[in-house]
Image (cartoon, rainbow, N blue to C red; front, side, top):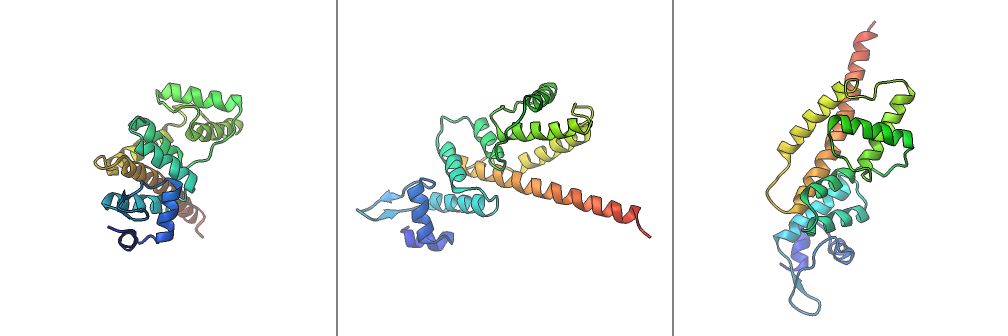
Length: 203
């Protein structure tokens, strides 16, 4: 299909398509002339992925480009690709040595693998530091309810993630699933708190 048809099929403007092509977020079409190219269903899928990552997960074009480059690079292990997708919804934090040690201790106790360079590690370390300052537990036993909930949600998400299809589609499902799950968990938590408060302070 020509670019005009790709635009009509995907609902993405030709200007945006040209921008994604220039940025290298989307692979080039099959050249049919000096200024013409043919596009296929793979390009339609890629445009849907880009749009969802940008509009729903609110990722920057630079982050989307990095994720798509990793998805297109078969030398990047799938596990590393999934970890990159999860990390994309967070910004990297500067953490203290104490916070770093708290996160390392917890992850070691759980036998979980989260690279220190990952924004997820930094976010965990930051939150554990806040808990430590408030004299709240930071060990697996004290965090058991949250750890159980995290494992249950993760298993649910894995069941909804499509394992068949392109690696870019896998990135899409991981990012969108993580983003929506985070939003849903936070909102349900607040709803539960409001509900409890209404009951506790009724009358």
